[in-house]
Amino acid sequence: MTTRQIWTRLLSYVGRYRSILYWSAVCAILSVASSLAGPYYIGKAVDAMAGAGKVDFPAVFRILVILGVIYGTGSLFGWLLAYLMNRASYRTVDSLRQDLFAHIGKLPLSFHDNHPHGDSISRFINDMDMISDGLQQGFSSLLTGIVTIVGSIVLMLYISPLMTLIVLLSAPAAYYAARYVTTRSQKLFREQAKTLGELNGYVEEMVGGQKIVQAFHYEEQAMGQFQEKNNRLYEAGVKSQFLGSLANPTTRLVNNVTFSVIAMVGGVATIMNQITVGGLSSFLIYANLFAKPFNEITGVLTQLQSATASAQRIFTIMDMPPEKPEPADAVTVEPAQGTVEFKHVAFAYNPVRPLISDFSLTVEPGTRVAIVGQTGAGKTTLVNLLMRFYDVDRGEISLNGVNIKHMTRDSLRRSFGMVLQDTWLFGGTIRDNIAYGKPDATDAEVEAAARAANAHSFIRRLPDGYSTVISGTGDSLSQGQKQLLTIARVMLVDPPMLILDEATSSIDTRTELRIQEAFLRMIAGRTSFVIAHRLSTIREAHLILYMQNGDIVEAGSHDELLAQGGAYRRLYESQFAAG
Image 1 (cartoon, rainbow, N blue to C red):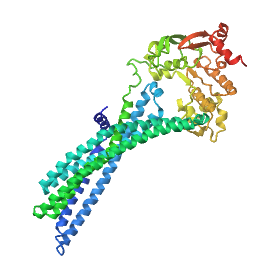
Image 2: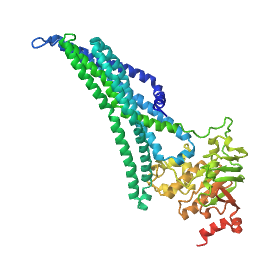
Image 3: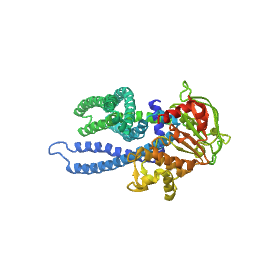
Image 4: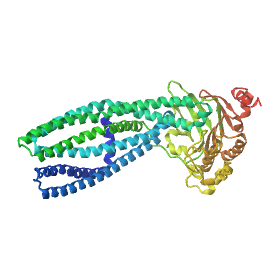
């Protein structure tokens, strides 16, 4: 994506606030008009002071009053311009942030599986701030700069066309000097934004896993990796900022040389009585005002380049294709259990390494299916396919005879309740976390779900009970307690079908027995899929599937599989025979 394409797209967001931009332009014109009127009266004041004993004090006093009004008015409209540009830039970023958040919610699960969370967060915070600063500074400089340049040229032509020509000849030199610098620094700003995202992602990982870092004495290695990324950010930042900052001094050098030439030519013209001393004074101020926008724009080029790099990172995410859209004839199904059928399903996360080649299975309503096997056998993948977090490459999955690809994702997922091995909580009260899937639940319903999940007893011991506020990481709770809350969350929703993916892996054996009793009550008569490594949790399953390399190698009840003496029996004996 080129710089022009990035800014064209960014300006489409700015264009949503045309009324603010309109009034900003009005304020810019009035503010600059005041600054342009000032030098004219300053020149008049200089001419009113011809020499010692030849000062027209009344005229000077009148001019001072006029200048006070002019500059006071200019300051007022300058303040209004800054206020309006703040509103425009922050509203633009607000819209952009909302669109980014909405789009990330539509991206397939593969994006979140393969993209560092810290880098995504960096795009919402750091990159958005860069864009806001760039818009605010850039548009203020642009609006005032255009009016200042045009007004200065008109007034300089009125005073001296010859000296105006000298000033105009310097403008291309300043422009090309700045362009030479910026074209070489843009790549460095992109590298800086990218490295900042990497560093944010790494810091998030290390801070979130500090217990593991310290438990494995990994502090030195973590510090070494942090320093490597931090040094890369330092080098990219120093180089980009240094090279970007050269634009302003370069244009100032050109302008100062021009100013010196004008001063010499004007001095000669004054001696030859072609221009008054006051007129020369006014012209020199106008020449300085003419150069000011070029100096300002080169001064904010660093922020503009950072904004460009940040906008590119944001638009890169927004250009990623979302989940495959629902077909036009997609049906909305009411949450209900039914026959679940996998028909010759094939799937691979990576096309060069197929995971599931030809998987078929029929699960009748009310069947309790347990899925076991070694890590990487494809157990969780089946759940991902059933919930349409990923779509099958070949074959189909149907619910009550309807291909799930022909259903809306929302209605399909409402038929299932999921309890995962990885607990997810958010900043809020215990009650809010349990009622996440049913926000309108009564306190009695929340408490009943917590009792059913055996979570009520520990919740009651918390400082504020169900009103206790926890952080998103739930650091004040044990892993088992967090797992109980996620189980209570599903029990409250009371879905027709269940998926339990290592749901009791973080719970002690005694609590596990109580949870199993709750699960048995909850899954009675319902279709359920249970993924487990602890075989003690699945003995009562109607059907146990032993998976290996994405295929079912054994299927049957607990007793039937033990009698076969195959892979399941070896797995069972590895867990219980030693005891």
